[in-house]
Length: 312
Image 1 (cartoon, rainbow, N blue to C red):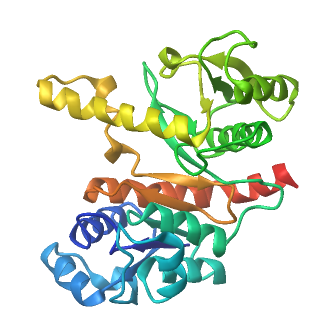
Image 2 (cartoon, one colour):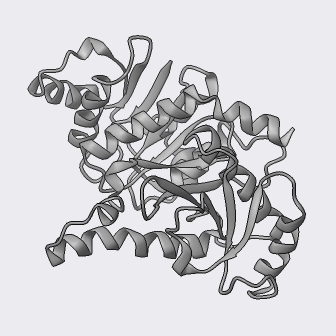
């Protein structure tokens, strides 16, 4: 198993990414290898300082990067030697089994679409994220930013992708799928949610439990929450603020601690032909470690094969 990691992506790269790789390597099995893509000359002193054996890693050396503010499509096409571009090239060639980066989100999306492409039958891929449940564990929220505008058939497919992810990566049995709306009644909502509800109510592809409102997001009986990327991104950014607010207010609570992005590391792009994980720009070593472990879990679960079979 070859797990690709862009060590130049993120606000605190390469230090945070390399140290995260070191922590992940302590958990990975002997047949699971981390491939570090980026400036090897910068990485080696960090590994030495951490007391890590550099021979445990494979390196793909490059000094070129894609900045956070660069135009994603232009950067991917004009910088083939950038760490993100190389990662996707290796993923496309089968030299990597997964690829993750805390770098430019747009470049990760464009790269996945240009290189490994969408699974046949999938209209648009979605970015998924974790939502903590009240008692324990996480639900899955999608889309959180890949598709600001959606049609009903796209949201229906998000329900399928989210259900498959919750089942095969997180082990949820017959995951419940809900549609985020402004009311529980099926006639509530805008044209998109009303039409989507009609499609989901008739599907046998997943366990649809109806509409939910924003106040229901964290309920334990909900495994997957579906919405368009505009709505999902607003919800995600609001949810991310909860953990920071608890720190500023000086109180600690297990539920709010689970809003800490470090715990789950990154957000997968669901619906493409290989495991691709987007990390938070402010990822620290703990987040990078968990992003690598999520990549491993997606590979081990054969999640991509499950998606291909479902959309065949």
